[in-house]
Image (cartoon, rainbow, N blue to C red; front, side, top):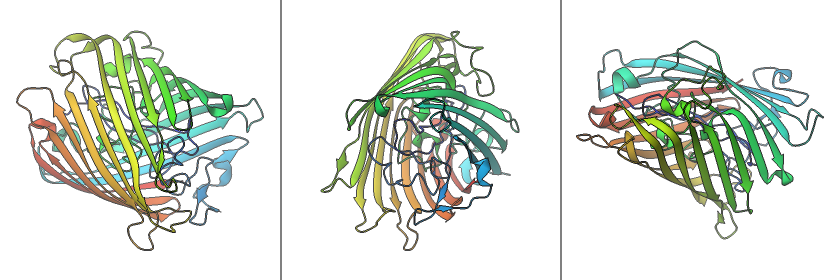
Length: 445
C-alpha cells in the first residue's frame, strides 16, 4: 500500500518573483503538489532572484504576462483581459502526462495511463485596485481527469507523479484555497490568513521543483496540510536581514489525519484535530567572486498537538506527532556571459526525520542536480537527475529509492514538454523494482 501525505509549494510572498509549484503524497491520505502558475513550477527564494529563474519561471511572470527571450511581452492563447483587469490577474495552467510502467511493479498489463490537471489561479492586488496598500486576495481552483499508475500498477509510496491527487474524485472542479495576505514594514513582514497550502511556504526545495517525483517537493516524513488537503491557518514571514528569514505557520490539524479538505470550506473540521505548527529558518547567501551563485539553506520543524493516527502500524492512535527537515539549494556554476538568461549547474539536497513509532516513513534523503542551457541554442531548457530515498519504519521493509532523469524543453512561451524516466527500487519497501517512462506537457493559456 502506498503511503500518503499532503503536498504542494511556495508562492509569491516575501519573494521578489514567483511561480507556484506542485508536490506529492504519503501516509494514509494522499496529497500531491503546490499550485502552479507557470509551466516549470520553479520557486523563487528571498534575496536570490530565484536561483536562475530571473524572469519569473520558464516564460511566465507574476503579473501574468508571458516573456520571450529578450524580456518583452508576447501574446498568449487567451486574450489579455482574461489575464489582467484593474488589479485582478488570472492564470490558467493545464498539465497533462502519459506514463507507462515498462517493467516490474505490481503489474505491467495495460499499464499506460494518461492524467490531466487543470489549475486556475486568481489574484487581486489591493494596491493596484486603488483600495489599500499591501494587500492581496488569492483563490485557487483545481480539477483533474484520467488515472494514476501508482496505486494499482507501480505500488510506490513516494508517488512518482506529483499530480497524483488520490483520494479525490476525478472530474470535479474544487475551490482548493482562498486566503488574504498583507505586507508590513516595506515587505519585511508578511501575514497570510485563510485556507492555504503550507507546502507553498514550508519545506520545499527550490531546485527540486521541476522533477515529477513527489518527494523532490518535500520530504515524505513531513505530514503538513498540503494539496489536495489544504487547511485553514495563519502564517507569518519575516525578513530578519537580507540573508536571514523566518517563517511560522499554525494550521488546522485535521487534514493531517487524512480527511479530504480540498473541496470543503475548511471550517467544518476546524479545531477537531488539534493544530499543526510549522517553523522554518533560512539563509540566502550569494556565493562566488561576484555573488553570482545564489543559495538557500533551510532548517524547519513541525509539531502536531493532538491525537494522531498511528501511521507506522495503521492501528490505533498516538498522542501528537513531530519531525524536522533540512534543505540545501545551491547554484554551483553560471556560464560566463550568459546574460539575462543565465545558464549553469545547480545542486539540491534534502533530509527529513520523524519518530518511527508513529510514522510510516521515519527518514528521508534526496539529492539532485539540474543544468539550465546544457544544449546549444536551448538556453532555458532544463536537464535534471535526482535520487529520492525513503526509509520505512515497518519491520521487513527495504528503502524505496527513486532515481529520476528528465529533460524539460520550452517549446513556446506558453508550452513545455518534459520526457521523463524514473527507476524505483523496492516500491513501498516490498514490491518489485519498477521502471517508468513518460512525457509531461504544460500549457499556460
